[in-house]
Image (cartoon, rainbow, N blue to C red; front, side, top):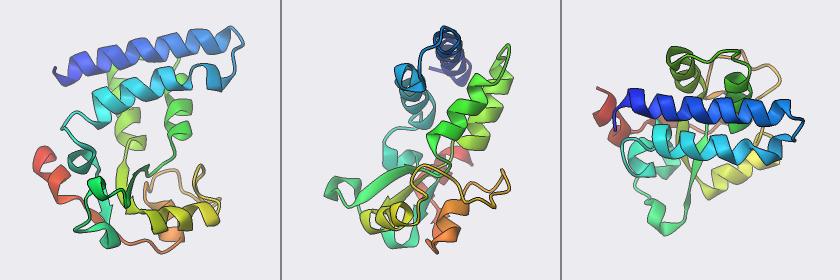
Length: 157
């Protein structure tokens, strides 16, 4: 499936979620209807989570997801992506792609690093001084060093 088709399907999910939201349903009633298409159609378009994560923490190098010692983490929590997509009045494919590119960064981090984020209150939010641009701000705030994921880079170069 090409990216245009993927974006068309995600666009349908955005429109559906907007309609459900406008009917007065809580976010929990439609969030998964957006999360799943984005995950499987966009984030995972290159294959496994190990190939699709944009970054990998330095501590996660050499560790496989199969060991259950790694977490596939949204660098910018999903709710920011969802909010941005649902704010688009008449979503075009270009607008959706722009939002996905801005907020769709992912990383492989260790379980201990995930605990660091949670202990600092950053498991579902960005730091209060976030500039709205840097997708790695949560990790920097708790001193988790990230590197570009080599497996991901092979697909985007």
